[in-house]
Every structure is written in structure tokens, then in C-alpha cells.
Image (cartoon, rainbow, N blue to C red; front, top):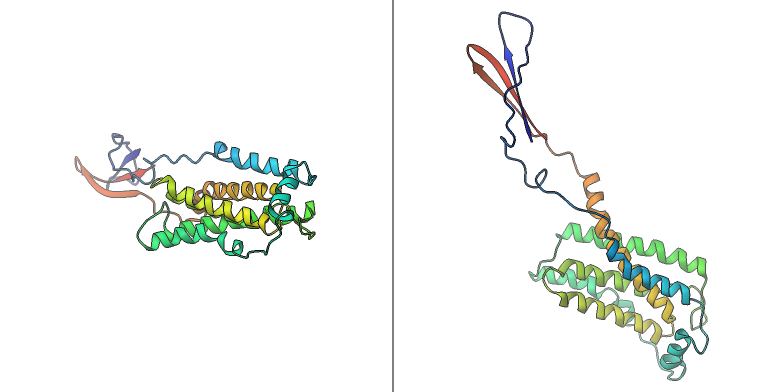
Length: 256
């Protein structure tokens, strides 16, 4: 919306009279990136249904390691009945989906955001995830299958699924296969945490939920934070001299 105001300047008098000129809607082009673009950034409730369900399942089944429980049965099948050497690949695999996002962009397969924005989103996702995971580990003090402490939830799995959701969000408009690939790597990370006798199934499920939720929350929060810290944009104000019926004046135009 544009507001036009004409201010005549008369040499015969010291008083200024302000005469509103005709207001013409849209007489000045509106910046399409500002006023004309309606940005919808509502909280994505539906996106949190699955991660909330995963976290809830993990919390409810935490501590249930009996022989008839899912935690107990999976540990029997993966570790107790089939002892084996551990593998350290999960320490690297959890980062592969995120690294893939940067590699794809480097080779010209552009994702949703530029380098700065996607980096900030990914960092924010990991911060949120860690803020949730590590205090929860201390609070629950769940014993790992190998007898060590701080089992619930799985930090490796949370990191892996945060990266997988990051990859999905960046490339979902190109192809769903990118997200599928990311989630396969995240699922493999979760399996390896059980394979290495580091976590129970409930730890892994809850970690997956935390990771997904952290990335979703980052994509929702980042535009708000970016807007809050962005510099003030220049005012769309125009002041022009006018001459009308022997009277000089100023025309004031303000874009809202």
C-alpha cells in the first residue's frame, strides 16, 4: 500500500498547509520479497508426530531388558547368541548424510538453502539435539548392555537421524530418494550401536526421534532468528518537489 501526501510551500505565509493528495493503491511497485510475499511459518505440528511417537516409545520401554522384552530379545539375537568384534564405522557413518549434502552442492546439485543458511540450520539442529540428549543421559542413568552408564538415549543415533532429516529437507523438492538414502545410513548407524553392544533398542528409537525433531525445529526456528538479527532494511520513502497552480510543495510517498 502506498500513501501519497502533498505539502504546498507558500512564500506569502509562514504557515504550512498539508493537503492530502489522491491516494492510489499500488501506485508504487511493492517489493515482491517483502510486502507481497506472505511468509507462512506456522509451527509444523504434523512433522513432530513421528519423532514424538519414537521418543515416547523409547521412554516407555526404557529399563525393560527382560528376556521377553524387545530390548532383551534383540540383544540376544544381535550380541549374546552371536558374539563378535565391534565395528567403529558408526562413529563416522552418523555424519555421512550431512557431508553428502555439502558434497552434492559442491558438484552442482543444489539443495534448498545456500551454504550459510544450511550450515546454520545444521549446527542449530546438533545443538538442540545435544542439549536434549546429554542431560537426559545423566538424568536417566540407564545402564548400557555392556554394563557402562548413560545409555538413554543414543547420541550417535540422534546425530545420524538429525543429519538424515537435514538431507531430506534440503533435497525433498528434487527427489525423495535423497531422503531415503539419508535415512538408510541413519538406520545403519542405529543398528551398529546395538551390534556393538552399546545401546538397547529403546535407546536407538528415542535417539532417532530426538534427531528428527531437532532438525525439524531448526528449520522452523532459523527463519525467525535470521529475521530478528537481520539489519534494518532501507525505508521505502520518496520525497519529491512539486509545482501546482503557482504553488511549490513537496510530495511525500511512504510504502507500507
